[in-house]
Length: 483
Ligand code: C2E
Ligand code: MG
Ligand code: MG
View 1 (spheres, rainbow, N blue to C red):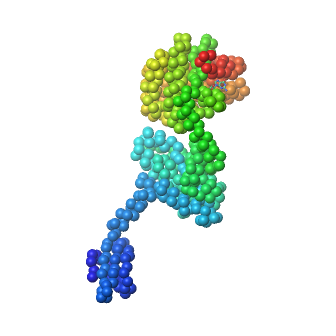
View 2: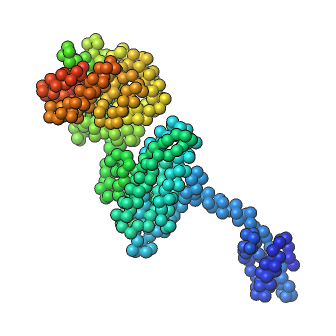
View 3: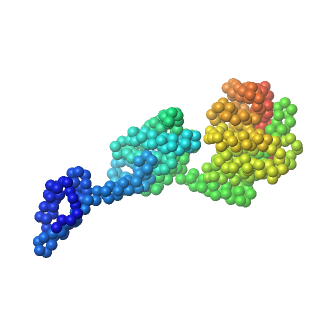
């Protein structure tokens, strides 16, 4: 007895049926026909020598199942394998009883400046960029290699390596391929890439360990600046642990009131009068003594603690400065991350609570704030400016020193980085740069402060270049407010 199927490929089904009947035992199996259809066959011989078979066309169900399986293991945007599939492949490739000769390299790739593209050109452009990145990655891979998207702007490559040298060369090729400009709806866009690499079985064979190791290497690569790659090294685990401890300690420090603000005077070069002071945070660590900001600000930025720490400094500085003689200004440093909070509101509240007129507050931002330049950042700066707060551009000369930033926002002051001031007496280049910045500032009518003046000789040279203000150990190092 037959039930079910209406088949165009009758001959084929007939052949299958004959084989099953001839075999004469109960069976259930699945046949793919020449036209691609998939038939489930159920066959039972009867005691009287007859039989019952059903033929079930399951083509659509099977296709839906394989689509679901694909979706579960692939990224919808780029169609690359996803994290789950990568992990699965990693566990098979890296297992020690696999081929002993071969190395498996895991490369974690993080795009630099992707967020800017998303923010300025919109998410559709961001999506398009990610698809182009996926294509460029696939074009670089060998037949056995695998590219995956782990989410956001993070990609990974599983590479059958012969040695570390070959892997390093691949990493460099990837970086070079990804920095080439992209065309997105008529816009020319540049992004870069940083890469962290772990090797199996050298660095481990557990997928989680390999992913974590590559991630630590990626962190190291990024800290060397954009467009770099780094291999995992065992000391990275220890430094990740130190970072974690530091993060917990910083949270404690905030709760226990272990931070202090010290102030360094800023001196007007014409009048030789102190016009204000810069607030510089210090950490009174119970075991390590007084710790400088260089050792903890960047960690605080990374772990998201800079907003509460920065707010604490702002409130303390406004409170302290309100008690100084009239006209003395206080300068407070801001991190880029603080522009992603409601900064104008926080500053207003600190001024009001501390009782400091806005004209006596100066905010120091670095180019990194403008690097993430969005309408929102500029709006915040203008809002603060409208209050009467002054804005200065800190550490000028160390970053891109792009004149574009000077045009993007009308700063009140440029602070020339102390590295140029330190060289001014010894090096003609340093002197020329200080001169150029001072001239530029004078021509657009803004002040210049030279940072890090330590000697009389430097002071005289700075004065001759036309800077308007100085700050440095020559006059005073940063000191507690009581002094
Ligand atoms: P900065 O804003 O450029 O501050 C000037 C730095 O130069 C201070 O280092 C100061 O102690 C140092 N300095 C001043 N005069 C001299 C000198 O004559 N010679 C030398 N060698 N150094 C001099 P400090 O206090 O270690 O601060 C380092 C950086 O940490 C600051 O650089 C600033 O970027 C950041 N920072 C400090 N306090 C805060 C804060 O409250 N919030 C944020 N976001 N960053 C802060
Ligand atoms: Mg500063
Ligand atoms: Mg500075």
